Amino acid sequence: MDFDLTKEQELIAQSVAEFADKEVAPKVAAYDEAEEFPRDLVDKMYDLGLMGMMVPPEYGGGGTDTVSYTLAMEEINRVDASLGVIMSVNNSLVCDPILRFGTEAQKEFYLPRFAQGPWLGAYALTEPWSGSDAGAMRATAVREGDEWVLNGQKIFVTNGWHADAIVTYAKTDPKAPRSQGISAFIVPADAPGLQKVRKEKKLGIRASDTAALAFENLRIPEENLLGERDRGFRVALATLDGGRIGIASQALGIARGSFEAARDYAQEREQFDRPIAEFQAIRFKLADMATEIDAARLLIHHAAALRDRGKNYTKAASMAKLFASDLAVRASREAIQIFGGYGYLRDYPVEKRYRDAKITELYEGTSEIQRLVIARHLARDLQG
Image (cartoon, rainbow, N blue to C red; front, side, top):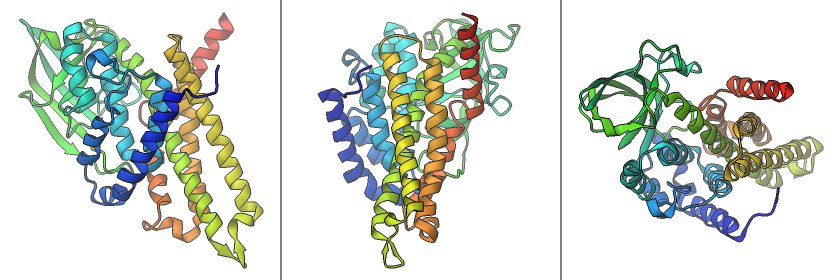
């Protein structure tokens, strides 16, 4: 594996870092406090090509590799994880499954709208009674003529309140066991029968919206079926594999932002007539954070490189997400410790990162699910 970035990858990271520092950073606290969707910043991300980075140019996207996408995600989330998850969902959970499983007509219609704007995508898999057990979903889709009729509930739908279309999963064969007999659909957000039930109040990533949705006799045409009928769970699992690389990159960005804030503060804050950065206790915290950040980045780039080479990356993506999400929580907690009492105040940047970090251990597969995925792959490796 080549550890050196290409000139193009370096340029992408630099340009996104400049955007995050100059355009995003001044607005982060206000959007978080108001729990307001950052529409103006999302529009600028469309202009920069960040909302459909891996979509081929013929469909209006940037055509970048996965490593470039992880670099951009790291830089955005270093400054604001709310904006980062909006970007992640549109790229990984909406554009990617349409690109990989959609018909040519679906690609030509949807991908330019999601990649260039103004459309925003959402992903509806989880239900009130099926969290980690996604195969136990109860939402149904019944074929009537040349239409599908959807009924059911979905929760934890990131971007759901502002989405223009939603990649949705429903049971199409009620007699099939558990994860079988599920299909994926592209559901327009303005379709009659789609109800926005509530917008959740959250601990962190408060400027992104998380919605509960309901489908009541919602009708969509046959051509909105995404992938093969009754094979939608395969679409979901493949999509989440790529999404976990994005969330790992989000966690890395949170950890790095926490580290940089703590490092800078430690050089400025004086106690006992000298900067606290001179005390071994602080230096050891910073050393651990820096080491683990580099380790997380290598895991993420390894998973991304496997994906770009067309190799199986399921285990690598789970390892990256497991390690990076744990690091995000730990690094943001240690950053508050270095800030001391000031770190607990909203006037300083680290308390927000601490609130934001926890979700990376939960969505797109909890840490427990990542360990289960990794363990299953290890068992297969041992069996030959």
